[in-house]
Length: 174
Image (cartoon, rainbow, N blue to C red):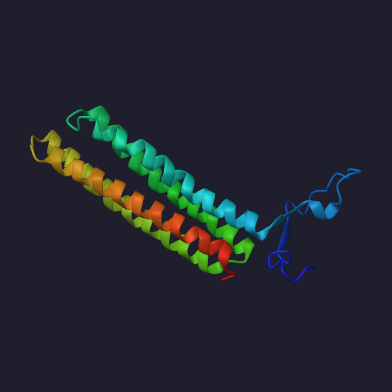
């Protein structure tokens, strides 16, 4: 093994319990996945729902929050987004643990914990503002818009942090 290849020692065989088909031109050791590949999978698992929310949420800036259908869709987007962040974080945690990068797995555990806490807070506040709007409170729509902006800011911050940390995943062996 070359001394300059620092990631060559960490290889994980995918599905070790299944027999590997023997092909004449493929050696059995070619059927392994590197630690970097698992790290990429972990990053992608968290970035996909974050990127989707970055794309989908600004469309609600064009909607009228007086319309119950628009706010129903917005509430659904928040609910699904935070669940997907949790699911992606769990997938990323597993991928980073397999890749031998437990510090980054811990970071994803923090992201998952925040997503769970913030999800319940956002949904509780959205429901309160929807009830206030339906009861005739004229400022409830303005407060709903504020919640929407805060969710977009939280997601954008999360996206920037994940993208900023990505080079560290591959530049160190933490």
